Length: 245
Ligand SMILES: [Fe+2]
Image 1: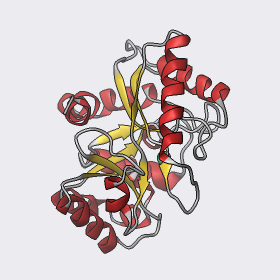
Image 2: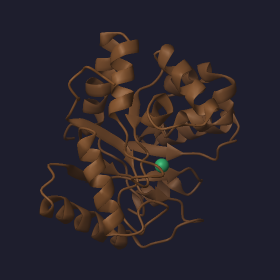
Image 3: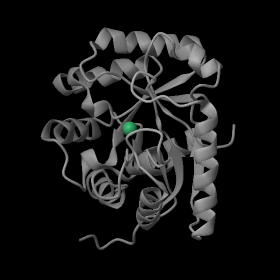
Image 4: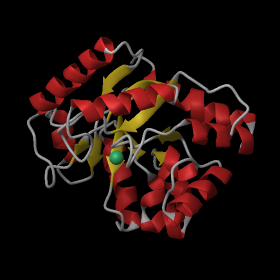
């Protein structure tokens, strides 16, 4: 148990909180359970990053906005002081720039795009994606970077993603908290020790199976990292994406 006061005012940059759009909550009751859990974890801003991956989940963009508004209304109705903001976890494809321009999927704020790849994508293709996004004035934020086999084999490759203009996100649960696959935990902690992580997100899908856990990770950072790096991960970098454009 931690002897620290729980942190609050945290921002979750990776959350499957909208119901019926992907493999996140099935209905509003499951969404409500996740919202209450996130609030209890000190999260006060949630980017609703439903998957955009038309091969697996298809829905018109209006459906995304309807669900976002419905969850914003639910949050108000149950009296939780949590801001729900638009975004997506976008699966990389050659159609991506067009899909962003057409509003089929959406960045977070300040042109940051939460970008997902196939787990075994060769690293040069990941780098190429950084180039394509940055050439179109987007800022790629690589989702759960600890899950890609090329990064698990050589975590130092993350430096090249950053040199190419990318930022990297790691799941809070990969660092501490709920049980995580060993390779992901080892990779996440190696990245943390190397000071290579930019942003954290819960990647929550369901209050029980894939929860919105944050405090255990925040506590681990405060105990194991320098004060400066913990501040950068919990406050400074989140502010770069979150602040009003
Ligand atoms: Fe996700």
